[in-house]
Amino acid sequence: MYSLTLVLLGGFSVCLALILICQPPSIYLLRGITNGPLVSHSFEKWESHLLPVNPLPRQHGYFLHITDMHVDENYVSGATVESACHKLAKESDVTSQVAGPLGAPGAKCDSPARLAQETLEWVARNWRDKLDFVVWTGDSARHDYDKSRMRKRKDIYTLNRQVTDMVKKAFWSPHHPVLPVVPCLGNNDVFPHNAIDEKDHDLLSFYEKLWRPWIPTGQRKSFRQGAYFATQVAPHLRVLSVNTLLFFNRNPLIEDCGSKNHPGDVQLAWMEDQLRLARREKAKVYIMGHVPPSARDFRPTCLDNYMATVSQYSDVIMGQFFGHLNMDHFMLYDASQPTNQTFRQTDEDKGGDLHATRDITEYVSWLRDMYSALDPVTSDPNKLPDYPASPLVVLQVAPSVLPIYWPAIRIYRYETNPSASNYGTLLGYAQYHANQASYDAVPGKPLEYQLEYTTDTLYGMPDLSPKSYHALAKRMVMGDAIGNATWTAYIRNMFVQARNNEFS
Image 1 (tube, rainbow, N blue to C red):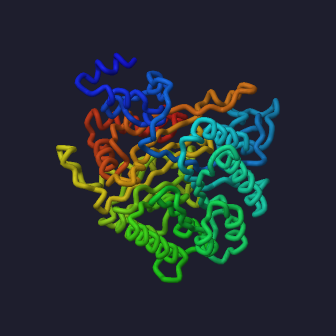
Image 2 (image 1 turned 120 degrees about the vertical axis):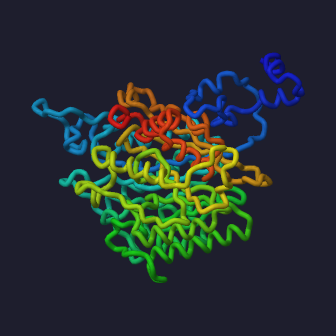
Image 3 (image 1 turned 180 degrees about the horizontal axis):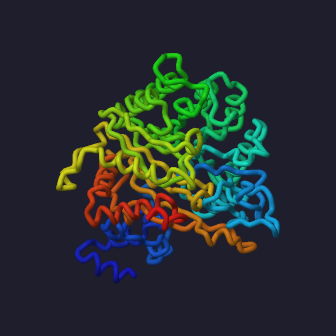
């Protein structure tokens, strides 16, 4: 292996060859071995040529994004999907699908506790020692799919305690250093569904106590006034956990933003204070929340005010992470333009969560229109404008553990060299899913996630900067052969393989 590497390197020094060979496996994550936008490689193949050596100091950091576990305490394996996976099928039942031991993909069912538990155990087994922190974007509690078993506030509290205990067990092992976890509220983590304001002291106090180990002492006041806080996860790197329900158009307790006393505007003022402080202290920031900002889900003035705030700090904000929609995709805004896009919802979808059985075609069309509306790229990709200093705003939307499609988690890689000019930049991510075979649940065999794709090998992205996402978005809507192939790959991954035939 050493001689082969020296031959390949030609005139490079022996020292350099040894360094390249001795990189630990985690260093190779997301480093593509081709430049084509549609080339896919397995993580196992990347690692197969590495020698078992003592690892050198790592060059990059990693963190987990996990979202929408939606644990259902009433889930029953073998139940009918028509009963929201609550009642066992009878011989007389005529049903196309029954609940599996680890979920019912594509059905209006939530997750068994076992799926959440085994997902976290897989992450702990395979990634616990490589991760720097965890971004956890909400919705641990189930939906109200079964009208005969409507949730009560105590049920939501119980489910969140259960999932929080799972997270602590996975990432706070006594045999490992404490791993920072950054949680936030989802729209199913409040009662009634979607409804929260600054006056719900019982709920705010409950979560402040539940997540107290992860909320810095100096941030507990802001959390009690609106369920948002800031925390440092690495040297010169902070995460702002934002309560997007204060902007949410389905929150009946919140009107449009536009006043100093509006809870959403109070939160935005707090965000700007945090971003201004980070800029002054030469720190970088990630923003995370549950509902991604869009015309579909934010009140119009709240969306405008949010974009106006974050676009002023493109030198500070290195990434924004959301869940809620269960689909793997990104949103890209030009904050210098009005955010007056409309989303035409069906009557069935109004007032509800986006689901696999409705409104997907409309959503994909809306997303493509968003990309098409952006200014075109130049003919030479190397002459693209320096978009990190522009009003372009990228929102990462991760797929869910909830098996609306297949359960999924995401591992990001980011620049950790504090002296680097791109410190904190997202360099790429690896998307993992548990495929249909996992639901056969071989007795005694733990759930396994598989690498689905990485952003460099599939999309040819050098990093996850606004510039790179702009190039990807415009490539996908160009209409030529390469663009169409890239768009097809993107849509297939958007639905995590479970409905590829329908949305190809």
